[in-house]
Image (cartoon, rainbow, N blue to C red; front, side, top):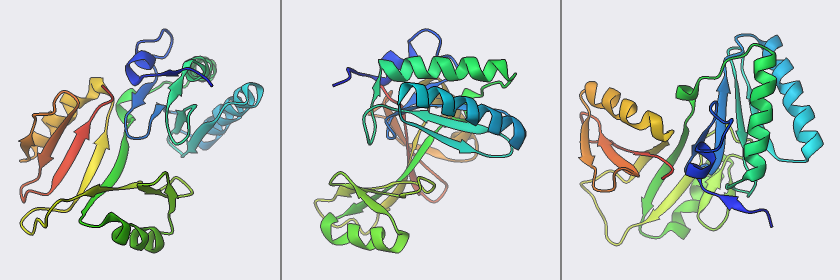
Length: 215
């Protein structure tokens, strides 16, 4: 079994400045500003050669303006020293193509639903979204395009409080800027007792979001 490392250990490794470890997804992610499909495809080709040689999983999202890359060892999430080495190699390939990275564009989003009986609720969301089960608690888009859904146990009904909220996982060096931006729009801090691991923010009508880092 490959030794598992924490998100902080990944972030503190040498040569991974383009990358950020994200809690929730359990992966390390980088966004490269290719600004064209052709350049992006060239980067994807280079990544394909690297992963084929190392037989290591990687997820790549190619768009006209950039390429998002996620590396992980332990499915559905978890990092190892192999991810550190692959991340370094991908960054070298990007530099050869003259492609810069933008760590501020990296994040992971999921939807959390509170339920009294999660076993009764989960099948509905799996069916209506066409998702698949992962583990015993979450459902995910098999194409990994839409946000995953996680279900949280409620002990009693809460008619006066939202039962669906968004979880946003950001790099630890981006958290304070993201919080400040949200508060500047008229949002407010609902709960910061779990800081610096996560903060609960609310919009002007008290719809909630948990902003979290990988501690």
